[in-house]
Amino acid sequence: MIRLRRYVVAGLLVWLPVGATILVFTLLLDLADRVLLLLPEAFRPEVLLGFRIPGLGAILALIVLIVTGTFVANLVGRRMVNLYESLLGRIPLVRSVYSAVKNFAEIVFSDTGSSFKKVLLIEYPRKGLYSIAFQTSEDPEEVEFRTGVKLVTVFLPTTPNPTSGFMLFVPRDHIRELEMSVEEALKMIISLGVVVPPWHSAHPEGDAAPAEQTASIPG
Image 1 (spheres, one colour):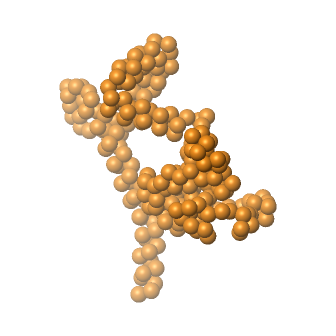
Image 2 (cartoon, rainbow, N blue to C red):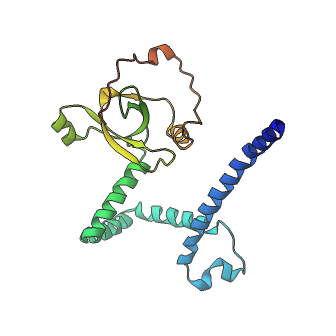
Image 3 (cartoon, helix red, strand yellow):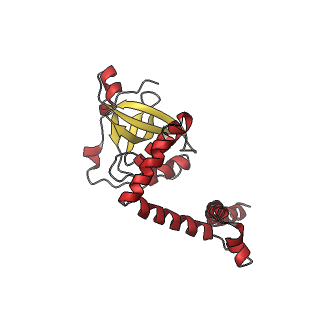
């Protein structure tokens, strides 16, 4: 029975990641294929060809993104974007949602910012307990003025769902930047800490912090 259990576990380790990967990509392709619903029914591939081609919606979405990006990169496109943004800015509820989503997208997809580019270690929820967080911004001016402390804005994700979490203002001298990438940190969070990224520091003794150096974050 012990040997049989070992064989079953070995089989699961082979097929479970494969099945989960196929399931995720199947769901993503089905979601992308919904873009085809924007086409008139007479021009949809399943009507013209008589059968459905999985992933064709993703190709169409990519083409639309490239064409749109090429168009708005020139002067005429930018003026049209500014025009419809000014129109949306006059609608109270739509203005709030649109501006929030646009600002978030610009921060996440921009290569120049520091948002979600650094993995941090903070002492939370109390002294002696540590959590992984992502830096989202630096120097929140009004909060720093009110507290008199240099702060860093971080996002503390929950596990195993990293899309939810807490936004915290952490004193700059209470954080430690980790060498692991954002992708490695997300894998560790989603796996409940089971997947630990390998680490080989060139100066492990110099990088270690004394136990009393990091202060606790009130929580």
